[in-house]
Length: 196
Image 1 (cartoon, rainbow, N blue to C red):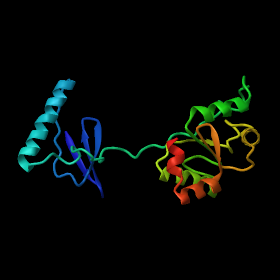
Image 2: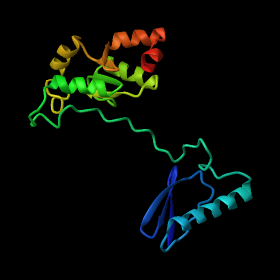
Image 3: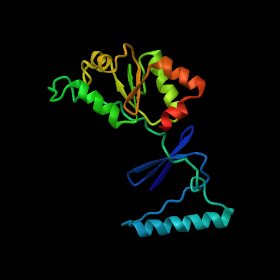
Image 4: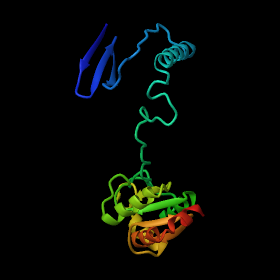
């Protein structure tokens, strides 16, 4: 049994214990009941529906053409990296070694205050914005996370010989902080930096 409930922007279609949210802009929804669906049966059903729609309209159905991202979710930001599993775990290598390995194994690393999705200071937010705005593939480490990165702030200041945060490393080398990255962005120097 099929029931349709109208909502402001979506319709809820219920089919034998399964519910599907369908955008109200759809003019038609085709539903087939397959007892034991397999890849071949599903592919054939899809081809049949495509052919019917193309014959009726002269074009592929919405969402079935190259470059259409209707069904693609928003890209997920990578999680912030953690240097340890937690403060309760005794490290077997010095924190400096973990930092060194991290900056050498990742092309671009930003040590920021807060997380990539929720920076905790304006400078960190600016750095994340610049890097994302330039399409840079980078990882972040939250220097305020004392649970998973205990002692990181002081150790990193010593490692980099740089007193403030954020700190951006490219190719294992310290570039600097927000002021330097901002200046490079204004001068158009970032493309060259991230190509190397």
